Image 1 (spheres, one colour):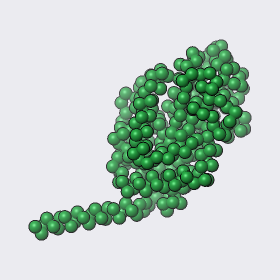
Image 2 (image 1 turned 180 degrees about the horizontal axis):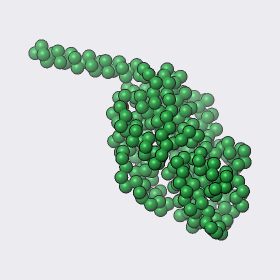
Image 3 (image 1 turned 60 degrees about the vertical axis):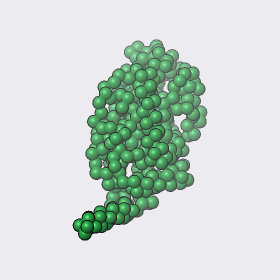
Image 4 (image 1 turned 135 degrees about the vertical axis):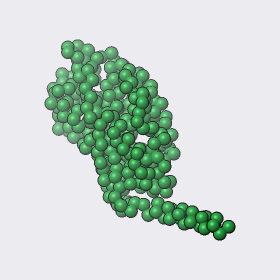
Length: 320
């Protein structure tokens, strides 16, 4: 009986100690893995949120870029990390909704290998063309694309921009050569330099170049116009039917992340999203806030993954 009592007492102490450890989280700097390169929209949002989390939680949140293979490199790294809250993942629909629809076999399970923490933003893409392209609106672009010989080329820095290009081909009957990139910054560089004709950046990546008039924006892929670009219509507004592609950014941890840690991070994220300064930043990069609780994020991602199966099928993207 004494032995059983001793074991029970030790277990209770361990549980109490674990709870206290969770309450004290974070005790040291936290690594935030981002699956795209510096300069991408996800990277910019991650760094802005990292600063808010530092202020709110009292520790550094250090962004680590691990670009490559449609986010698979970064996703595997986080999935295999210790579930202690010191390795987190700020990622997009690429790794958690689009990849399962495109890859026949993934080295990670988007649902089983991660703990949803909270949504951050939703963001559309933009149809951008090189600065000397002989069209200033979508109608002119489609006419030029159909007449182009050789055919136009379009770049993609993630599955969202890839799907945007293939969806446009499918919906309008134009043809374009696909040129893949590791991320948006490299594709934008080649767009400005005229090495590709078309790219689908997110507003965060392209706004500065729009202001400098180094690229032209002809359409928005979402269901509404971007506040910072009110004159640019959506694809559907400009006559392309059933065309809506919107990306999202959210935070995840490895599977089995302790509930108190998850709750503390979720609260800190939602507090940041409600801050006027952060809201202004979101508006500036052409996005919308995406606050959720962990369960809400899990349900959203599950539904979005189903929608990406349809997007991949409609856009006729080959499975890998």
